[in-house]
Length: 181
Image (spheres, rainbow, N blue to C red):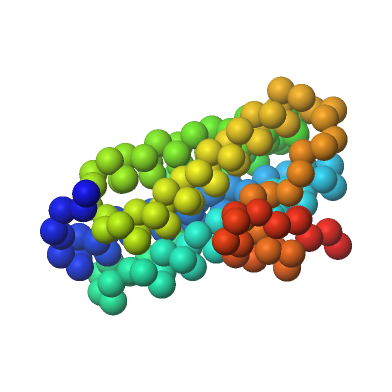
């Protein structure tokens, strides 16, 4: 149950959630640039698009406050994670393994942050529903990264959950085919 909070407090929570989505968007964009495997490139690009849609959703529900409106920009920590991914890839010949490990860490951090913000109980029901849906998709991303890491030769992975056929947004059912060029 949500506590009565001010628009400014709500804006700060939404800003934090937006930063998590922006950080994972940047992480997936960076990951797509660091792998050579076309399937992984497409997968990481699709997840980056999904995370951009998270930011857009959050921006539409944020109270109109200049000092607490989500910007969609990654945090310094997100930028450091992307840089670290590039550094590790540069010194390690198994770059896809390194990138997958970093993606798993990134998703784990995102899940922890979102769960913590949900546990604070500051969000109203409609907003909580959106964030819980996003959290489920973060968890699916983490599970998918772990599956690919643990089973690199598996080829029947299916689509990125929550993507429209044009690579944007989420469907009501949360699933749609991955667009392929």
